[in-house]
Image 1: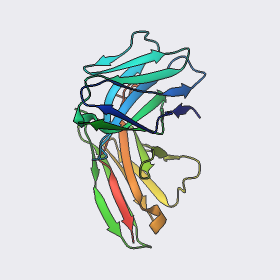
Image 2 (image 1 turned 60 degrees about the horizontal axis):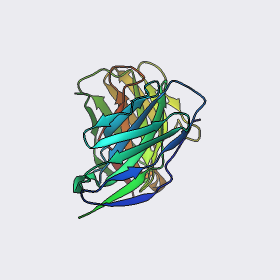
Image 3 (image 1 turned 30 degrees about the horizontal axis):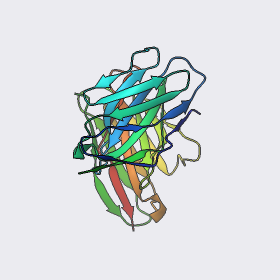
Image 4 (image 1 turned 135 degrees about the vertical axis):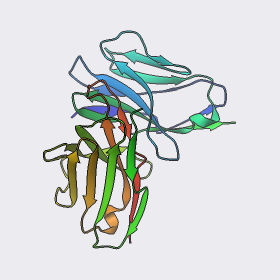
Length: 112
Length: 117
């Protein structure tokens, strides 16, 4: 099975500042997809951003962007201009075929 | 679009009884749905992959006779926890892919918090 590692169980950021959440994964495949999901206290899983492995350009969605380093098997999430509503658990996910693997999550606290 | 509805959101049952959780794709067809279990402050653990019209595929260590999955239509999958025990208390989440493409993200239901007393 593929493994997805999030080495930061908890992170905090000042409101309006920038924070980067780390994610690494293990795979021998060249074609796959990567995702970041957010889970606020409501427990609803919300898609934040996705990246296709065959694309070299890093994905961006408004204040959220990724740093995808395929050779290093790294997929970090950068949140700019952090807002109180960004406080949540963030899960990195690897997908190939019908398989989806989640990391252990990073709990993000936003300090007013 | 791509809404997944899960019901009920909370359920409390007595030990030994069975509980059914429904997962519906409201605006798309889902030949495959996924059932996850999540313990507090932990990640999602895949329990099984539900396939429309065929048997579910269970992950190693998940008891198929205890967690019955039925995927009778392209928009509905059900998870039945049979003879529930307190250790089955957990948060259960279903998900599905819209579009059927492997680059499609998973869309999640709101989850069901099961408490077995």
